[in-house]
Image (cartoon, rainbow, N blue to C red; front, top):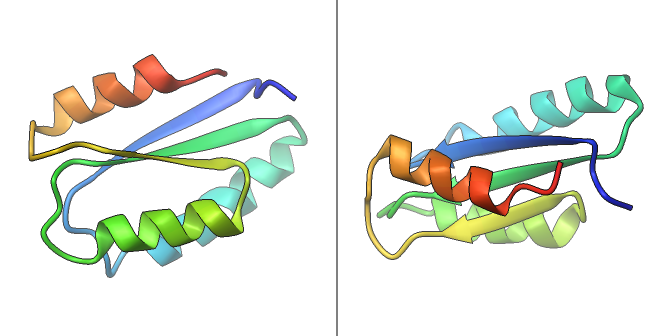
Amino acid sequence: MKPECSVVVPLCNEERNLPTLHLRLTATLCKLAIPYEIIYVDDGSTDETPRIIAETQRADARVRGLFLSRNFGHQAALCAGLDAAAG
């Protein structure tokens, strides 16, 4: 089913915050009772953020991960996520 809502989250070195962010974000989005997707965009992280995104994507079909080859900056990561958004 095509999502009605897409949430794009640019991330760079957020391994400590991503699990909590995901729990809070999904709790809020579930209350909307509409199809949604979350797009986590890794902007060249040097920590475990890409691994956590990949694990989250495997565990939750509503999550999509985009992995940029290097740090392009917040705005470029946001644009990449918006380009990939279906909602």
